[in-house]
Length: 205
Image (cartoon, rainbow, N blue to C red; front, top):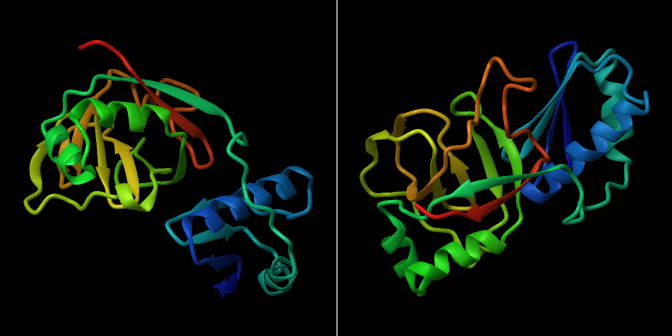
């Protein structure tokens, strides 16, 4: 854990893994709810960092955080969202080949995995989900698509994600969902938020 003071009111904490980011983010949320973080306004996790904004004395807080014992997250921590998915993606066969399984097994493996939203970005409502073991991390496509349909469930490296709207993309597309990932009229607008657990439930096409 490497806390770095950023400007006058922000603190960036560098970590070594997505699991460490998730654990620290959860600990920060707990301590903020308990009133231990003063006026911290925002906690923003990323792939290997957590940014704290609105820190009155970032240097002093950095010293405190460096002494914390941060427990790892358990599989049952965090709210759970279930997303219905049809396994009809154009890259399903390629992912099955990379995994060395039948196409049907891709749905089973993904369905039995409890993913966690590590961080959000790329587009409103897009969450980067972790949870697949390293041996099942597929590469990005050699040639990205110019338009990926909204609702596409995709894999790339250590991440899974669902495209909230049509956009270019180079991830492997394995399925589709009718779930609305981003709705400005909903509270909260985003279906996925950092720390949320996600299960993908297979439905008929």
